[in-house]
Amino acid sequence: MDLLEYQGKQLFARHGVPVPAGRPAATADEAVTAADAVGYPCVVKAQVQIGGRGKLGGIKVASGREEAREHAAAILGMDIRGLRVHEVWVEEASEIEGEYYASIVFDRSAHAPLIMFSTRGGVDIEQVAEEDPGAIATLHVDPLLGYQQFHGRRLAFEAGIDADLVRPLTALLEKLYAAFVGEDAMLVEVNPLIVTPERELRALDAKVTLDGNALFRHPDNAALRNPSAEDPQEQMAKERGLTYVKLDGDIGILGNGAGLVMSTLDVVAQAGGRPANFLDAGGGSKADAIVAAVEVILSDEKVRAVLFNIFGGITRCDEVAKGLIEAFERVRPQVPFVVRLDGTNDEEGRRLLSDAQLPGLEVEATMLGAAERVVELAAATPALEAR
Ligand code: GDP
Ligand code: MN
Image (tube, rainbow, N blue to C red; front, side, top):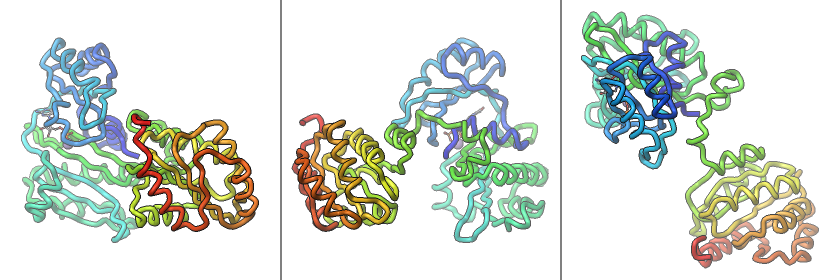
């Protein structure tokens, strides 16, 4: 789960990482109230989960009330690389003497958190990594030992920062590490980490990714969802208890069991098609789950054909067939369906389907045959506007 900048900064603040004071706002009026509270000059920052907002016009400095209103009005509702701005963060402006970079990410191959630090912050760090990898100091932290002062000193000396900043940096990294571990984060990134003229360090930006599987341990964080960034279909599926991932092709996929769905994606790709989604209806899929799944798949306008690949173990193919028949009655799909049923009660399931004579539904005997057929049908089905 990715946080917005200000949510990340509030999380940092809980762990003592220095951040500028600020307030969120969803309207120009709220932004003015926020600006009055933080004082002038202040910075109005678009809250969307994307970097490079500065260059794209999503960050503006306001020297007074009128400017704060103008900037907030201009930024709210703005489209930044396809993301609509619903909120701004208004914070006290900072004076910048230097821009550094700091991050902690979990390095799975090393089974340990990795701290990265560079004096070349404020810019695209991927570019620095490419042009001058030596400019980024890196260090793994043994998770059992935890962060120790020497980690910070090593990074500081390797990156070559001024002597007076070594202690503040070591202290800041300790807090950042505490935030990373304490909040079950997968990534915390500060770019830029600024040096003020008073020689203090502050996190001017925050990028935080939390481990979604650990959210049950952090109810406050779990409540931080940013629905505007979530895909509407994925949200709909979540509400219905289905495992659904949206992809960018045009063939809707449903299977029971993650392994089967994954291999179905592969076989569809092998047959020359492009899956529109990954939908696992789960073991023991009952009719209701099938109806919900069909609704989710068809809510994606890019879908031109649907492949149902069911291997009946605990799942009974006759149950799936009944679910499909019910779904066709309720939803009346406008695109062709190809169904492959194999395993427990498959004959019964196929008999139910052929008796029902569902319009546009074909049954195939094998997974490869079904994949090839659905690719053909998708290619022959016009896009939604033309239907
Ligand atoms: P990003 O472009 O989305 O990564 O947004 P950042 O929060 O990193 O801001 C981008 C740039 O805007 C920073 O590198 C700063 O140079 C500038 N900036 C942001 N806030 C301030 C501020 O309070 N004062 C000044 N002088 N510059 C700022
Ligand atoms: Mn940034």
